Length: 248
Length: 126
Image (tube, rainbow over all chains, first blue to last red; front, side, top):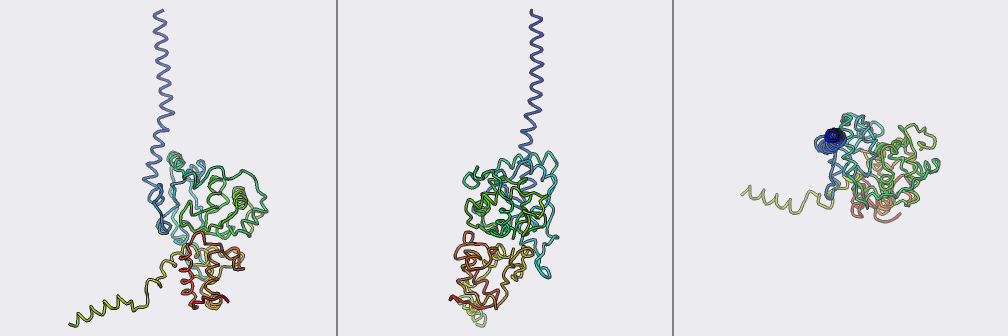
């Protein structure tokens, strides 16, 4: 009996050790990664991006920052996109951020001054995952990017295209297919992979409420218009032909 | 004695700003506003050839065009900036900036546009 008890006790101890190892393997690396994410943000990202909300940013903030603000990244980006993009970054705004600093007067029209545009740093896979996780915790106040405003409904792409290109003039600054549209705003044919729908909705509704003094106009659009444009933008894709998606 | 006279003259120059440039004519703020919001379409040279212009179906206005700009009164320029192109029977591609810029900033921009076009200052409607 006593031998059996000892045997049970040893077995239980062995089980506990195994459980402890499993917990350590599962739990500790997650904790370490989260801490690293904030450390990486501080050491590698904060020279170009704000990671905490600035107090009353003026127009100068637009002129002095080197990249988009990240203090509301958790309400803006899709985490899986962040993980990928941070490892293989590509330019999202054809004329960079902020456009005026990367444009030169050409012989005819202004041109993008490629010599002023630096490639974004690449992160290793574990760093990218840690940074994405840390960024997703940086959310905007609920009244700035409200949740649930966008209704997940498809819009007619021909109608959407007409509003995007002709009636509301979004294509003046944004590209709806590769090389189709303007250069001063971010490309939108990757928006569905990159952005959260409620962010797209809130940004169209009032860009300066999210990003004070940004160079996108507030068109005072109706909710119907914003819903239609958001849905259209989220249906665009990099494989889109000019038909329906990109025609001006 | 000569030195004193120079100092006094310098003081008077500073006091009355005889250079003709006073705070009201300082265009550095509207120039910065123009570079932030307008240059993306109207261009670095203010000639309507901005980085967004190549694919636009209606070309942005050339602000250096003294004749074209001279025909537009100040209140119409203000109206166009505040309420957009449609409000003055022009293109929808000119957005309304009234939610982004204050009335004062829009007035400053109109003054700046007059300096760019070198085309006077019309305050009355056509």
